[in-house]
Image 1: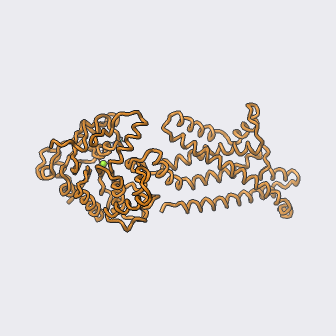
Image 2: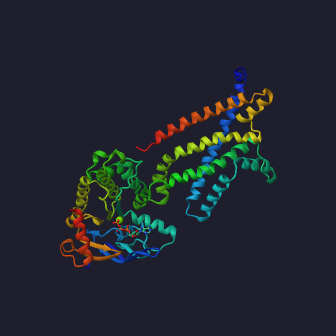
Image 3: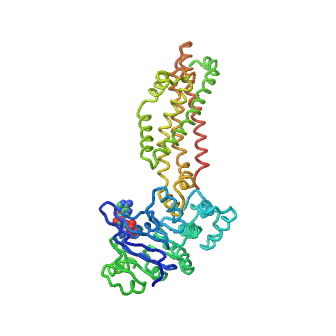
Length: 255
Length: 215
Ligand SMILES: Nc1ncnc2c1ncn2[C@@H]1O[C@H](COP(=O)(O)OP(=O)(O)OP(=O)(O)O)[C@@H](O)[C@H]1O
Ligand SMILES: [Mg+2]
């Protein structure tokens, strides 16, 4: 484990007023690694994930992507430019999809690449088709988001993120808003990305999925990483009492 | 009801209605411009601009439009602003409705789901690109109906400029009362014409709204 980390979170801390939501978090993710973040509601999982692309800026600490610091201190105008550049390399998928309702699936996928990468209409068409094929929705290219099921919406949202050719993908409970029967199709897409060695950080309530797909699992509680390790260890032999309690409760609630 | 009289005078009323329509169209156009600038100011990152936007809204919504018109038309020359009555009417009404439109547009913009902004920014789009390509196209659809309410108010508001002697519908009705002594007929006729203008405008707004509906 001497390789330089691909994503490097150093001493991340975040407070809302007096409420400390993240307390000195350190996380190194290697290229191609898939990390799951689990933990009770309010433990700071989303806040940590959203700090990685500076959607929720940290109070202190550093975020690095390869050799670039994401949240480096710059004058506002320069920072705007810098962060817009960095965000192109960090894909993010939200619980509620956040597709653009006024654009077709094609428009959703090609809007940012066309504007930010200056590609031609033809290249954009090919890009949309390629990404949709990846998530198995080529036949929905001219649909509007409102004409799609939840699972399809989320797959389009993934395709939209992938179209920017990101170096890392962040998922914030990508399947939590879905009806149970639609979860699997999204999980399958994420598994496929895993097989393609996409670097991924996944906040999830689905322990089964985390166990199947992830290389490492972090258990967070009250703004700290309580325990981390390979899924076998965290799920079979958790050391920390809080982890044990959380997993026990979680298993019960799923029965 | 003296229908003979109504049939005799209505062509003159229709001419006056053209002035009313011109007033409404020009002042609405000005109002839309003021509203867009006002909304941009109120949503700006600059504190000074936000203050200017808020001051604009509270001054022009907080005082009677009639007083604003009087200040512009009668008080204007005192500070070197010479306008004829029609110009004063257009500018006075336009800037006034612009304050309401500022709030309408701002309301539509901030009611676009915050997730839309997050998704765009996450893809690397700038604030400006996000506003242009994602927020505004959705906000436009949300603002058509409430802007229609503003425009409806504006059409009726044009009657105020009778007070500065613009020869529009209300002023014309008053003038004919002077010679005919038939206020019921004259105001009735004016009222019918206002209603027709508002009805047709309403149809146009509904048509726009339907066309723009998000699928
Ligand atoms: N904008 C905010 N202002 C104040 N407090 C906030 C804000 N956003 C989040 N918090 C608080 O930060 C804490 C962590 O929130 P976060 O959303 O990161 O939790 P989470 O682990 O993602 O929970 P969940 O599983 O419910 O999504 C919570 O206590 C929350 O109330
Ligand atoms: Mg969360």
